Length: 223
Length: 218
View 1 (spheres, rainbow over the protein chains, first blue to last red):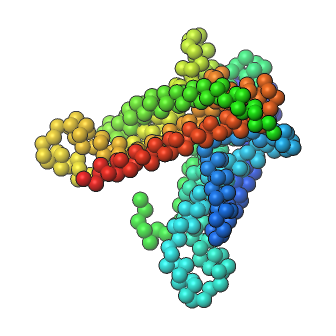
View 2: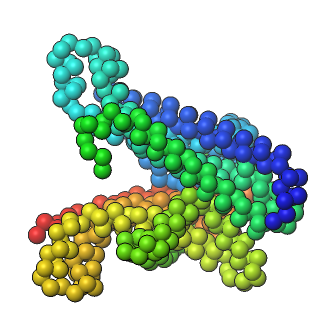
View 3: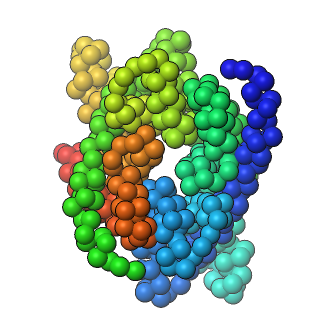
């Protein structure tokens, strides 16, 4: 591969990388917030709401991310939702991952021993305090490994945004490849780059995970 | 909103759904074969084989599927191999899925109690028979639920093979969108097919799990 080429395209590649990170961060944050909200609403004793949320989660987990993006970006205008590619991409990542995050938080909530909640009630804690001081901390810690895992999966999904012309890294590389007829080299370089990125993120993720769950070490032996 | 668009293109979508199922099925079957080989490499006693297996899993799990697909597609073109796009599509899905399936199989193999293999050895089973009659049946039973989950993931990932021009559900929905100028209806229609297929697989999976659980209770 010609190093001059990389040099010439460096600005667009760097900006593409920035857009990738931005979409990943914003999409992931949106997904976490929405997913947490869904998991909380799911605990309300109101069945119709629960059914609606169930349908939301099943639809977003049961259809391909690419299809959701097309529906949002191309289909949006016919229901009065005009978005530019990047906004649609971030919103798409957020909605898609929120369904998974909702399930992760739900599992986290159910990992809190009932005895702890009963104990909180019996010593006279208000429901809000029980939630904030007993249920949430334990549930969030239980959810950390799955959250890290989902964020890693999400970093790979950002590549799909190139198909709806979000100017992220993959899109810039494909533009470069098309303009310079070097598709093979460019895609190969891209594969190596993403592999390094995902490896780094997973290593970092397991470090964070180890740190956040370190206090559990004396309670249960590591698997 | 014109739901007629979905009704008019129903046959077209159903045909594309069949292609999606066929491509995913081929991907999962070839992926299982490659994944089983990778799993055997990872549990082998030879260090270089172990490393090779680990490297395979790391690369194919770490590189986004879209990048893998485009790489295979351009790789074949670069070396002038005139194979249809379907080969790149199925090959890409299979290679990527193999990395995940090998981990599922390895986990299942580790979950078979050690005593089982030891008991078989003590009873005088030959090495291959231990694998064939003791370890494999139990590992497969344990790995059925995650393998069915992997099938659902591959079915969704197969929407990416639309970029190499396979006329599967996503591609056909795109075509319908551009022909009818009704993208919303077209993608809702396509999405409904994906959802229906996935619900069927999930139901089949639940059935298989019940059957297998019944078998283990003897």
